[in-house]
Figure (tube, rainbow, N blue to C red):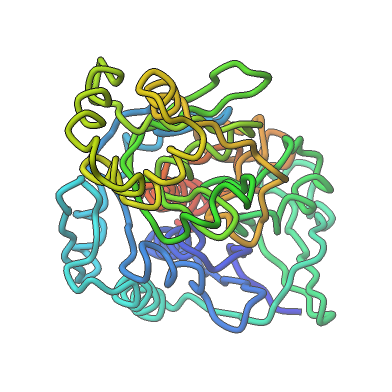
Length: 383
């Protein structure tokens, strides 16, 4: 049996941040990762560039039962946090934050180098399948009983404190075994599958639009941005942000900037009256999109109604394979991120019932929650 002060289950963004923070407070830390190496998911963020945060601090970018605001009070911000690790952070024109190198490997390398410098132990291919509390040394002792973490390899790790930072759906079963409530889990930040017959002819095209998520013919949320047509889905950041609402229909307003679409289309159709039908709308939309619209509507009033409310029925449940994050998670956790049921057990990252919009907000929560969990777990362990 191996022994450590703090066992962190999960070697992703929040887990590595928690490890660094706890080790800086003098704790002996072990990171237990089920994959062959830590930080694999981190390498894919921001299309390999690692969109590690955002300049915006608007709380509306977060969804779920956990209030992230108390965590920001102790988080120095992405630029300061990573500067201390030797990484320069730069914003793009939309306020998204990236390493100046433009490579996600810079972030993972910096986290791993700091873990190595602090003596954090990495144990990969270590899938924790059960966590149990050991016997109390003394009924009068204020120190919680040690945890015994059991891996699928029959290995056992004894720890004084545990931080669950598995991300996604992996750690929820462990949390439930330990008495915690987990909300309904659903994929978020993913393409939304729609009628393939409507989008297949438009595959590869992009268009600026205001997208409204509808359920039972009622609008439930809306986002504006660039929409991409794929083989069987609508994609793009604005669509990703609507996935968690579970719409049954998506409505595209292709002219969100135009208050009188009918007048505009009447003018365009008059100007192009002698042009081939396929070119009637090329001054406004990509040719294939114009052709698709004209198949359903030919008069200016009908076209105006369609371009302002082009509806795509959602065909099926979204797939986890394409989801960037998990919506839902462990509930009932306070600002210290310690379990209300199991003293000495803490949570960090995506495992909790909170997720952010696309644009670096989920990694910001990962860093901030890892810092909080690591700080809290290390308290009282060292003189």
